[in-house]
Length: 333
Ligand SMILES: NC(=O)C1=CN([C@@H]2O[C@H](COP(=O)(O)OP(=O)(O)OC[C@H]3O[C@@H](n4cnc5c(N)ncnc54)[C@H](O)[C@@H]3O)[C@@H](O)[C@H]2O)C=CC1
Ligand SMILES: O=C(CO)COP(=O)(O)O
Image: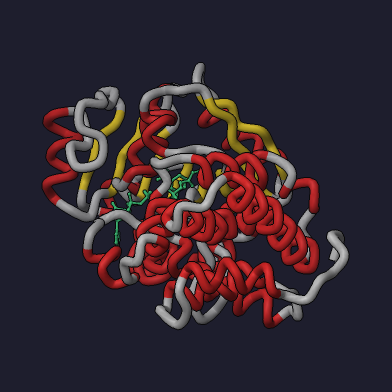
């Protein structure tokens, strides 16, 4: 059995652990909280995130990072993006030197505007052949329930992408392979910002014309930045781009869409954050993605306006009409 460490016992870390176990691996989850760890080891379920969904015996948990990482061939990372750097820095001493990293995270770091694979490389010194990402339309609850879904495993080294693909291919989970790490990561992070925006439209009571317009122009914006940074534009038409965007913008399970809906209904960012424990990555990544786009001279009205709403500078309604009032242009621009 292949040993896999999963750092992060939230929704996605837990659901993906079930996928890994279903694929025949031995999984040790690092959980931050003792009670989450105990429920996985004693009740074989993560009571906080997925009560009633049984985890196989091959999934164990620990609060000790060294124990989680012990002899692991793969190290899966699934903590909130803005918390990766500080956590990973404390774990470097216990991580096996040859392990392949698998990032499940969909965000861009504030300040540095780095993608998660870049943070991993910087903190651990791992080369691109040891850093992979998994990204696609994978709402954690549906994956935990073994509903059929596809995803993308990307690594600069296609052989490594192939290994990670084998690691998580199950009867319900179908990973495709890619070498476009940048495109997959940007697609995953940007769709959260677009889902926030779509959620705001829903919260304001607007219908399908509005949401379809936002999804389509949001995808155009994502592809524009991705292409400028060197990604393959076709990645954005695939599962890690359009696929994830459709899932996240359509689903009431999405934390980002739900966050946006609450903003559209008039709640403030502070009120929404206080009302949930779960991470809505887009609420932070809107600022870092806008910074990244600005740095590269790319027009990013969705990221820019969502950031302004999240900061409380403009209302969600004003944002919607500000989009419409922008100067007319060619659709391809
Ligand atoms: N939930 C989903 O459906 C999916 C989530 N993702 C991505 O996976 C990543 C993780 O998200 P989720 O598991 O959904 O989030 P979550 O909010 O469900 O869980 C986050 C986990 O990180 C832990 N955590 C929170 N603050 C921390 C800190 N300061 N230090 C260490 N650990 C901390 C929490 O205790 C929890 O175990 C995010 O980047 C998200 O965008 C990707 C695909 C699907
Ligand atoms: O990334 C996701 C689905 O692929 C989950 O989206 P949320 O973080 O908005 O719940």
